[in-house]
Length: 195
Image (cartoon, rainbow, N blue to C red; front, side, top):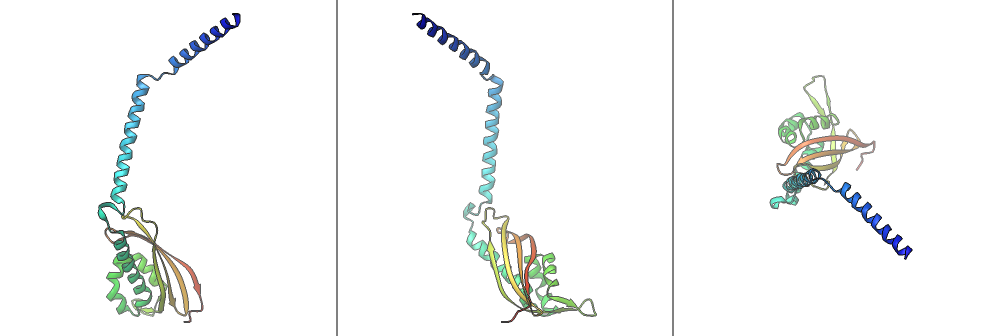
């Protein structure tokens, strides 16, 4: 009987302690309102982000990603092979300047021309020393945003008896089919450019 009374007292003490803890940890109406507001704000942020991601998605409004990538690839390949392979004189350059500058940007074209040109005594006369261009490969990184697709171009022009390998990294707007930014890096240069 004594043991039963002790067990009942222990249960009552535990119940009272739990009730006191519950009362002190019970959230106030202010805390509940703040939490509800945070949940609402988070839901709105998620909806806005989801909406903007859907608009930028390559699959929004039946955007033809494959066609856009092909157009960009063709345009970039044409411009790169024109600069490094298709320009043999100042006249060639002037005839194709607008097209290649539109695709690659004038700064990139100027950086590319440094590798294939020299100047004679007249600073306005350029000597083009390009022997050809063996390959130009265009690849796309995983396109998550059609307004900023990353494109890698590896090209191997022959200049003055040397074969060079270059990497162009291009950020391209697939919707507008235009350049955002680009960079150029020489990866390799060999003295044997024989066929």
